[in-house]
Length: 45
Image (cartoon, rainbow, N blue to C red):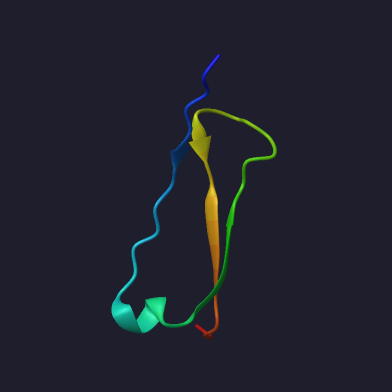
């Protein structure tokens, strides 16, 4: 059986993208055919 997974995308301006420090694709637990994507940025709001 083949399992397909859609990964969420993160769009950022070049300046914001330059502050990206870590990324994680959550594949451990399946809720649907989407795999949540989190990105840690090094900046304060």
